[in-house]
Length: 85
Image (cartoon, rainbow, N blue to C red):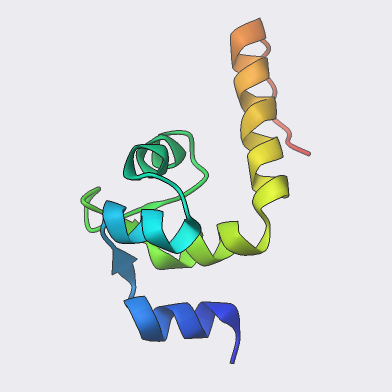
């Protein structure tokens, strides 16, 4: 059984902000920031967090955080770039 399968079995397809925060060990406010910047994905029309995106973040946190930081730097510097690393 993979981590994704295990998480889907435990939590279902979507989790509340509070439950997502407990899963990844962060605060609910941090989870909201992670949703806003794209590290996690919304579910249920923005009222919950997609469990698949939580599993992906748990497996590759450094890579996902790096992409977000890079995008923020580019946005702050006014650099428009179509490609990604």
